Length: 267
Image 1 (cartoon, rainbow, N blue to C red):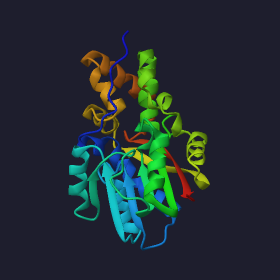
Image 2: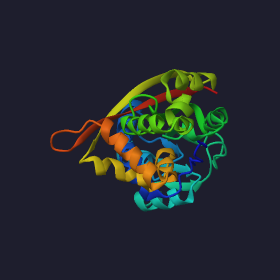
Image 3: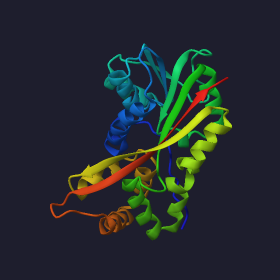
Image 4: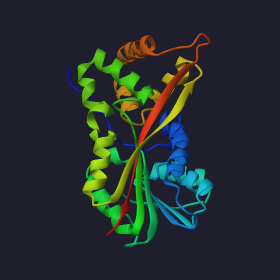
């Protein structure tokens, strides 16, 4: 069977929110609590998406300024609606941040590093815009392990179609493991590098509540699902249904783990 052509492009905010944005919003406050940054700092969110992390910074960190940079105009539109002016938003990429040297105190990135082709260049650019002794930090889903809503999907998909392994985030994104994250930040000459797991519950009312977000087409797993014909998609749905733990009342309780990493830009 020919491997499916599946895009990592993220363009439309609403399907993303239904699929994974709602869970990102739960990770963000825990990530910020771990960072424990003093008030009055200038923050930059690289790959701000629909604004989940920017919103959490605005709510919790008493920032003097918040800037979000995002390549997708569709996501920026949703972020503008969500943030209501709480952050200054720019279209741009992780490897070409539209800010001056040493212009921010804290650089963060949520659920983005694995989608950046040149991660070393992105870390170099984050260091460029950070002040001396500024904090650079990020978090990514544990695709290969405890990001259970995606792991259940891909395990069922690969059982039905071994070629699906080629688009499984757990196989494609080695940086989503703690050792690789630590190495990436250490190799970027950041100091005091630390890695931490962040776990959140991801409850679903029933199987349809779990399955419907995969039909939005945003992100590798939903894009793969929508690349299938109707019969193959039904087989995948039923394969997941056979695997997923369902309570007596029909509800589903899963867990999502993110790996967070931080370091200091010593320059």
